[in-house]
Each structure stands twice: as C-alpha cells, then as structure tokens.
Amino acid sequence: MRILADENIPALPACFGGSGEIRTLPGRSIRQADLQDVDVLLVRSVTRVDGALLAGTPVRWVGTATIGTDHLDTHWLEQQGIAWASAPGCNAEAVADYVLAVLALAAVERGQALTDGTVGIVGFGNVGSRVHRRLQALGIETRVTDPPLAQDGVTGLVGLDEVLACDRIALHAPLVRGGGWPTEHLLDAGRIQALRPDQVLISAGRGAVVDNAALRERLEAADGGPWTALDVWEGEPLVDPRLARMVRIATPHIAGYSLEGKLRGTVMLALALNRWLAVGSEPSLEALVPEPATLDALAATLEETLLASYDPRRDTHQLRATLDCSRADRASAFDRLRRDYPVRRELGFHHLPAGGDPVLNRQLEAAGFTLIY
Image (cartoon, rainbow, N blue to C red; front, side, top):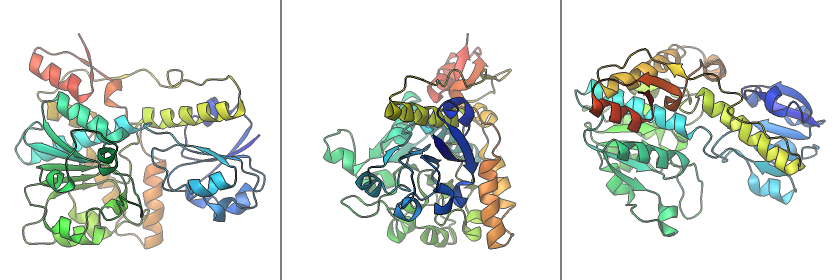
C-alpha cells in the first residue's frame, strides 16, 4: 500500500509503517500529480481534499489528523466510494489548555483572578465541552450556546446574545457555510461592534467564524475594543498584519499543537485505517508518549502556574516577527512556525508536587494538572 502524508503528521513510521510505503510532502503543496500512485492520503487542515485533488487518482482512503473536517468534501468522497476518517477530540485537551493559559494572562494583565467573572462558550463539541468542564470545576460561571445541540434536545444551553454578554468569550464553533446554522462570520460587524472594552475575546476554532476586518475596525476604536486573542485567522496562512499587531495575543493556529494531541491524532487515523483494512494491529498513544514533564515547584498562584507551563506571549512574539515580510514570505513563515513548533506538553502530562495550600492544589487539579502528593 502506498501512503502520502502531510509532513507535519508525527509518528508516521510507528503507526503506519506496517501498512505500506510512506512518502511525505508539505500539506499545502500536495497536488493531484502527487497522487497518481497513492492509495492512502493523510492530511491536516491545510489541504483541501475534493474532486479537484483526487479525481483520476487511485486514492481510496483519506484521513485527516484534525478535529475539523471542513477541508474535506465528504459528500464527494462518499459519492466516489472513497472512505475517510478524522480524529475528533484528538487535540481538544490542548486547546482547552491554551484557553486556560490565555484566560490566565488576561486576568494577570487586568489585575484579576482567572476565576473572576463569567465565561461564555460558543460551541459545545469536543473542545467547548472540555473548556466548560474545567471552568465549572474551577467554580467559574459559564454560559454555553450551541443551536444544533439545543435543537437535538441538549439542555442548559442559552442563546448567542447571552453568551456574548459574558465577561470573557471563547469561540469553539466549527466552520459551517450554509444550512440551518451557518457559523461563517457568526461574529459579524454588528456583534463585534457591540463588544465592550472590558471583555475578553478568544478565538481558537476556525478563523472565518470572526469577521476579521470588522474586528480590526473595532480594535481601532478609541476605547481599544475587547482584550483579544486570536489563534485562527481568515485567509491563513496569510494573516492581516494590522490585526495581528492590534490583538493582545496572536498565535499561528497552534492552540491544539501539543505533543500528545498530535500523537493522538496519528494513532486515531492508524486505528481507523486498520479497521478499514480489517487488520488487527492497534498502535497506542501510551507507546509513543514520553515521560511526563515535571515542574520542580508550584508557582504562587493558579495563573502563574498555567503561564509557567505555557505562555502564549512567546508564540505571539514569533508570529509578529514575520509581519514585515513580503506576502509570500509571511505565508511561508506562518507554515514554518507550525511545522517547527516546539514540544508543548498537555497539562495532564505535567506532574507537579502538591503544595501546602489545599485550595491551590484543588484549583490546579481542576485546571488539568496532575499533582503528586
């Protein structure tokens, strides 16, 4: 079996080496000509997989090592009898880690505690539900909106306007164009203009859920607009340089880029391919993940400990260093930052010695850390 994979997918030999010959390419560079002798295609979100890419090729199985599938034309794939799989939830813990770190930074910069105020969550899927669970464990009042789930009878959900009135807003909706519940520009000019300067806005789902031009205009207003963190952008890999300089946190679509999240995605695809092939081999995450990271001592506060494990300002500095380049160089730099992203461990794989403050210990465990007593 001949396999072509995005070069950013880790552990390919360990998970797919027994299935056939593996070749890799940059995800944005994969073209139809590259697939003339390929049976299995493994991608991430940067590769659009549709008839234009696959028609006339021998590809019969497509896997995306991502939560989202908006880059796959699944209807066309199914019409052609091409099997496909994704990795739902593979990096959801990592995105929840990212959101908590950003909330911690916003709290520190505003002289508050992470547990102060309300948090509104847009989208209650794999990521949104995990963010909600951790915030609830920390005692933070949350409000969640997800119209499709509400229509299916899920209780406890509220309307979008109620969520957008919260002190802090986290966007985790998938990108949906058309249909009954479209999310493209869900935060349109009107909703963005209504955001207050005392609010925090975090977008770590899909870039086009937010009208980026309208957000830039809001941040240019005299009051400065909301404290904003963007991990996803319209037009990736090209980001709006003005907007990237104006938001407080600007990261290159790496919220889910934990070591464990990447490996989990690869394992999930390998298991799905093995099921399709009806073979019994079962790669495991445990066999691939290294020993947990250890922090020698707790910081004095929950916020400081979160930022010691991951500080989004580092990634912001790296992205902003590319903004004065030409368009082509900026696009290449965005992809390079993702390709060469340093190892980041999920909070659950950070082992901390328990301290003498039982309240802080409970907070750290609620946030997702593993404490050693």
